[in-house]
Length: 101
Image (cartoon, rainbow, N blue to C red):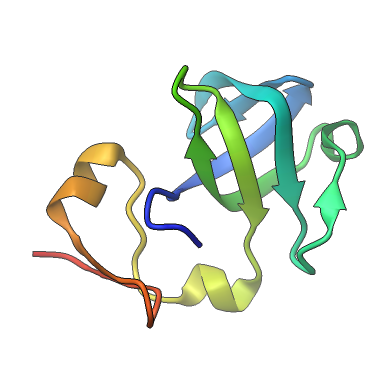
């Protein structure tokens, strides 16, 4: 996952409208959702699904890229859920591990 990815709970409502960490949000035009097998998923096929994901935002604050996490990825070391946490924590891109200060 890229360093700018954040972790969150995502529910697809009525695409492009989603709920992200309990807040209404929107998928960006051309947003990509990757399944646990790294295959592209259509947002319409995920309506009502509650998913643990890593995601990135575009410059407008819309959700751009989404990766649905496998149980192993979800259980891995902590991952920041807000941009503020990402600024404060350290990231090892080789190991894909965040370290809290």
